[in-house]
Image (tube, rainbow, N blue to C red):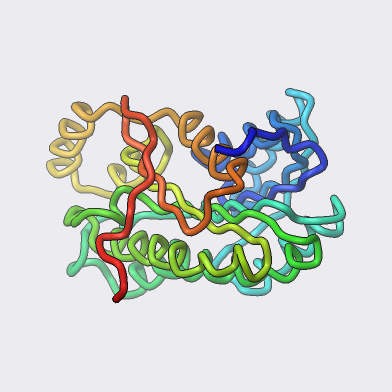
Length: 263
């Protein structure tokens, strides 16, 4: 593995950085020396992350971003370049789940929004970042997928579909490393201790919520800081491109090979 380098002089942009994995990653990137752009639709959460970074001595800026809005995606990338002069790292992290009821009972507008946030925004954010990274001589894009993108996750089929899409996109963009010195990788964590599962619980009727609280109470949650460390590993290791990293509680992170190779 190539020597680990610090990120001094680098600029990172994290979507969904107002809480959870995004906040932990923004803080970790700043602690590693990067200037960090915190992007989120949640202004209060984003400003809190900004304060946490600055209180720890890091450099950061916040930009209000609705990742389902193409103009916002372009604006957040332009903001990063205008504020800090470049863009070296993009963490496409913003994500939501389906809430209740699950597919096929869920309303069409809800699952369309999940696709917009979890998959379309990753595609759009990547497309917006590539020209800026090319001007800088390269960069790294880390996408947040999920263990649900590697297995048959029947509890939330549309969420699983979007995360399978993120995994597929990541692997398909491996050509960018040779073409533009841009490495695209993704993380696939299991259950992480973030607001996301709690929001899904809150949307359930009482009886179903009780059942899922019991299930989740038996599943150890991954601390967001551990996921952030995996993101940093993918950022720092210059040999990794088109890779998918599984993150499970109590186990070493591991790269997951595609189920088959094209002939």
